Image (tube, rainbow, N blue to C red; front, side, top):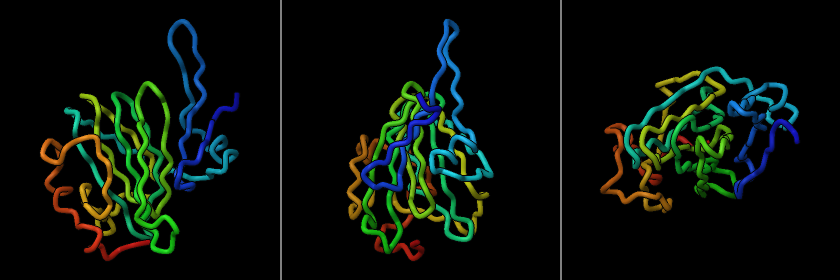
Length: 186
């Protein structure tokens, strides 16, 4: 078995990555990132920063976030504990999948990771209490280039696993613009 299994989703630039696990009587070990293995799998990226989030309650929504150039970020997302409904939206104006979205369930149990290249907005909803998410990014956080799209924008019609009135969302994310008001596309 190869160290990494890489599979494209419906939007081919979005990849699901599963790292090999070595099991024994104590549990398992997995090499979740190796520059060499990722390069051999066609993902030759240098990550600059790791971010980790902790969400207390299920139904916590974070996103949809992205950064504009020259601070755009590729992201590698995985769940350390709990489970999330991960969402990626294509925001590349010239793309044939512009404003289309995909979702994928990531969990500590399945060990899958999602690779999200620059040019996509990213967000998630927690499905279990005490969920921790780790994401590696290929550029530093740049507040002046931080952007987002409202998670519940009717034009996107994302099929979130939570009703709007039950979603736990930050004040900052609650006022992100709708698609029709976004000025910074890729």
